[in-house]
Image (tube, rainbow, N blue to C red; front, top):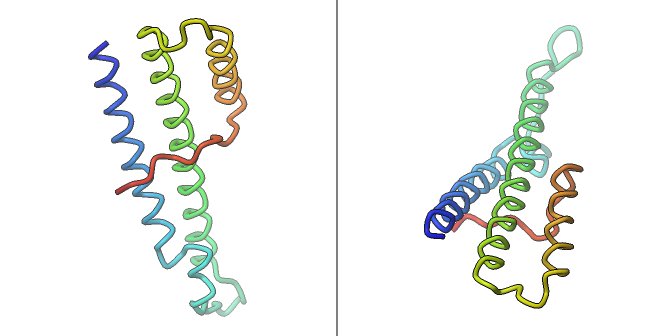
Length: 122
């Protein structure tokens, strides 16, 4: 049980680190709410390839970090539920536990957004 709790604590800390990276991205000059404040110069051919590459990289990284954060949150919740189940917290409510756990698994497979917000970085 202690190993499971230590694993949960490690995942929570990792999830906070991922959230901190997401928060840093949101505060960066290429965040969508910041792009309005910047001028982008076009080259002689009328394109701004570097700006498009930067924006594309930003969107890709943010999407991957958001997905990672969501999956971590889901795994943390499943592990916490398992610990609670072993401790007898769900005694008499096994059907409720089974339904919640099955929904977590389905959401994980379908890559649905987490219902609860991710753990915020301090």
